[in-house]
Length: 226
Image (tube, rainbow, N blue to C red; front, top):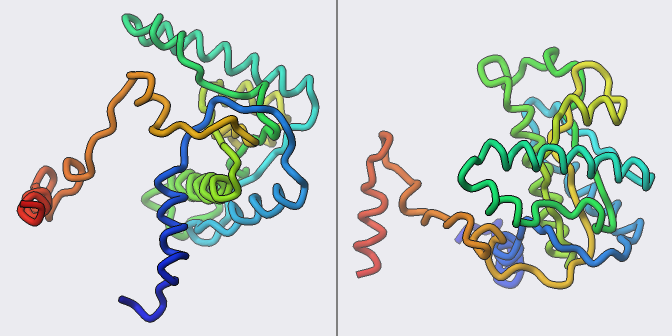
């Protein structure tokens, strides 16, 4: 084991936060203490970013009318998504897909404007700015779980409509509505799995050796278990 490894208890806590993180939809209101919210946002801000561009921008929604307007945008997209799903439309409409009105804190994560000026790491993969934002969201998610708070990532909205609602500058783009706060309980498994919407695939099906669909890794794992 590396001399730089955390203690056994610290490692266990990290892996527990990863394993028990859930995309939450059911919240119990309440509040998030200012010092706790600051700690969570600092954890998000410590995420890696391509070229150290730190493309994330957090917008904390504190006005009730603005929260309602965001909920309206989410509901509009929920209906459009149901229509696009066709034969699964009714099944989708029965799912609870957001907690915008119920969560203690509502945040919008946006990509900053002027991203085209950042070339380092993005010349051939410009979407790395979005990947960096996703890392910040994951940091926030794991820190929230460690603090006993739930978080849900809502992507059901028209980005242009939300950008207009929040007066984002030209070139900036909202990528996530984040519901954060106390929850009655954490789902024992991902909610979509619990509701029968989808079944997670095992890791062994998703790891290849050298070429696409080369599965020697899976075979070795199977051999080690027998």
